[in-house]
Image (cartoon, rainbow, N blue to C red; front, side, top):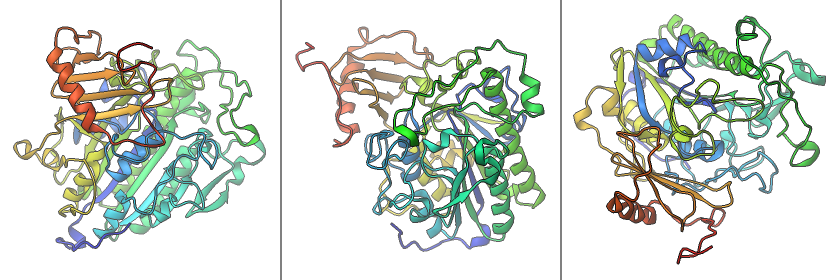
Length: 473
């Protein structure tokens, strides 16, 4: 849904914006966040030259709802897409598509005078649905529409502007065109052809999400043999018949492949940064980098081996910090001084209002969002930075629904809507090791109040419980 917005700035004063999203990358997978084994020099340099966030949160702990929160600015308890919806009418991986009435980040940026492009993994609407990226504000799109299809790192087809494109290099089981390279080449081409006016590029890589197949290049060979390995052997067991995208191919060296996939992505981002500098765009280009959720134990990946959660508890499919706290780097040399680190609490639903600030616009009241702009933090005016009263998440893939709240220094989690609370003081216990619910009944009561206002009911994702109100199962 497009809105009529009057621009208050001339186009040539607006910065370009490149938002890069990794897939299943953990809080601790980058060198600048403490990683010791995996090399990420380009992202480390980007963080050193800009701002690193230590308290940035994803929209969910799995792909589709996290990306929907990012794209719509609606909080996890208000957004329509609250799960991966693997059993929907369009089959495995298709997800629940965005609707015409959804107002997306791309639609907002178009109204601010930006060209818009989505390259990589979409996951919010397959072909011939209302959720296709070109129907949701993107002028150009290239990549995976079905997020299950994005499990393949060597696909034999992708979609460009809603039309299927064959990847001949990967036909008949060949592996000659790696997704990171395909998406990076496409991004470079887009930047080269759109650098004369402000552009917003959403670049969503599919690594280090399984499958853990990577080019056997110098990056992979630099890791091969360095780590203990437990080979991953595909079992051929899919969940949806012959078109199932859920099968991961075998990998003899999954730890080396995981490290290589992170480093290869870092190298790819380095290529983009080099191009932006070469074209004289770096000073006034905002580059943001984050991940959609915590690290996953899939396809042979072993998050514990690399401490991928960075000392935080849990990973993908958890609402502990390791599942939802993300690395987040912002570079904008024109506005952000080098070497900045902030503990401002921010989340994916803050991106739309923040982009409005970056574009020099006032966000229309017609755009529904629970987000709060962190633009003041970016430009070094923390005294003007508003704060969230709370952040909320929910997850539905287990027998009961899990919910989590963050307010002040407190984190509240319950694994059953009628079950007991876990309470953690993140200021003193960021690893969520000590449940202090019994010592702080007033915090439990506050959490109970917030849980009642943080979400609206949803027919597709009701809160599942096995415990009666009186506490019996």
